[in-house]
Image (cartoon, rainbow, N blue to C red):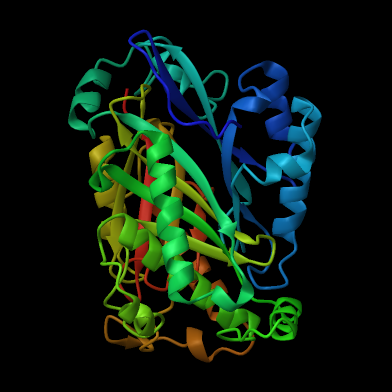
Length: 411
């Protein structure tokens, strides 16, 4: 759970482990507790959590806060540290809504320092007992070739928190710059020197609630919007612009503030942003590749040009030595540690020239429509419903599309 800067030596290097765990309800942390009990992961090695809960994904989705509270309680119990102190330094990014075949789950990232090249297979998700020998096991003769073909360096992680974002700053350029600074700080912590080595940035940004808007007004400030839903959209947009600046995808130009939620040709191809009432600062998780790290994990990613872009899934899998034809074979699927997807109902009302009704349905929110649709598409390719599929992809990938990112073992 340390947020200390990266340190390594000729004999020791950090190694990332990723565990994808199911939950029976939003407060169920029994799978993580079992990992602690087995000694697979130590509580103080956990550095970040990303998860999908079964709420509605809206402003009043309290499943996210319920999970966060339960997680902090467990970590406090196992580390002896105050839960509030852990909450202030450990990003816990949650997206509500598990429509269709999506399965509630959470991904735990843990970091430990180990002797160079020792235990290279320890950086993966849990493999069920009795699983057949396949890629990534001692009997796999293709592991070395996959490592050489994958990105240089091993998968690295860095995290950061911005200072609390005042309600009047949400969706403005001060918010954008705050995110950019936090992304750079997370890159520095991970030991990722070049923006092009970043594969994925996950952010959680605060939004304006009625209470926060009233408090700002009482202090003499004006919020960009007092509508909580609209505020969440502006927060996601600001997060995407901030990530784009840090990754060299966009200049730091305050004149671009007017492009937020307007010019959708401007986007980050590697940022996934959520917003919610349960956070007051911008929480940042950066994943990328660094030669300062070791381990078998790598990450592939690709932008999705629309909600039917199944080709993008294959493009994200390819650098990892994974091939879906049309579905990923079971022995390859066993190497997948986590999957992250951002999607958005096309605001033009069409997908590839055919009209869609997601934006006009008053019974089902458009974001729930798109999560179910894109979640089904990606799950069909991977043969697994444990996917982090998040709507609200403003400026995150091409307009009307989004992005897909996959973590897997390559050796």
